[in-house]
Length: 536
Image (cartoon, rainbow, N blue to C red; front, side, top):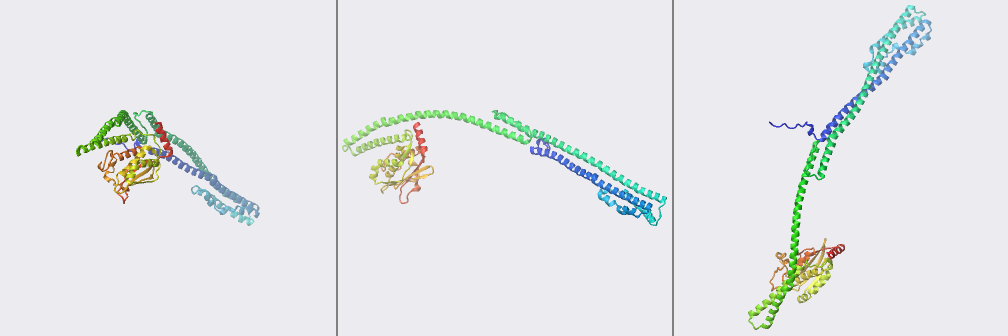
């Protein structure tokens, strides 16, 4: 048997906007209904006021004027019959001869159609017409003929007029009865209107109280509860499960807060784990640092031994081999002389390799404080050191105006000397032509040393910067193969990079171009770096 699914009419599952909409709709519907009833009662009250104050008043006044006109007419006819004076008939014309005119249209114009007393109106008009036709008119004609009405005729006229009076009284009574009913209806409508207004006010107050209660239950309490739960978590109790109440929106918000709390717990756990790993790595790094310091001390001891103890035996070997070569040259066979020459050359090359290796190891390790260096001075010193090679090869060196940089003047001098020396050494059949150029490239100075020598094949563009790497036999080109490796170490020590740029080759030559960069440093930064180097 399947479980019963929750119905969509369950209020607990309604979202907040639906609840608020339903509550406002209910209160609004009640108020709209009461306003409609109040408007209807107001209209009825106004209609009742008009009916009582104006309509029935006009009808009563019209009927009263009609009866007064009839009384004046009866008095005039009676006076004329008794005196025979024709002037006594003047009131007939002034009264407008009411028996000849119907007052029904005037009454009907004043009162609503269903309120007009047609029976009583017609009875009054019929009694007036009968009075005039049966008594007034015959009496006037008889008096005109110099005759007087008999007492019986006078009594008959009185009886006929009494019929008019009775009909008038019935009409007035009917009108007053209608006015009384209208007054009662007006009173009822006024009372109902008062009740409707009071009820509307009470409904508005009660609706406000209900809405306040519902807002407190649906919004304020869930928000306060969720804030308290979140405050517990924010105070450090990350394991606290956030509970929620209220509409689905707040439940979903609580679930989101819970999910965020769980992610935060997981991140903190990961950070703690990472902290442990960092601490372990730091310990290992400190151990490696100590090991590196020990290794550096051993390397310094090795450098000392290499520069003193190792070179002393080499000097002796080279010295005695040279003595053998000078003393016994020509006395031994040709093969023995060749062997002695190889021994002398090998000792000298070993001394040169040791010296070059020592120089290479000192770059960046035994450095002097960085200062503002004029590269033009470095270039002049490098050219001075290469004066013999330039004169011997007929080399021509040109240059752009070189800038100031922050660095170590001896190393930068050696950098330029090595680059120009390589260009002169690896020359073609033509006299060497070497150019030192420079341009600004953003935050770097880009330098290049181009020549018309034998060039560098693209596949060897990276290899030439490796220590002791040679592309030619030592018999063809001398040296230990450490020059460009030294250049790379010096450039990287100053925060730049170096590479062989085959794309910049002059089409008219077969030379190569070596490019390198050095950072552009402002005067303020240079002073700061100098101060930092001095303090360190």
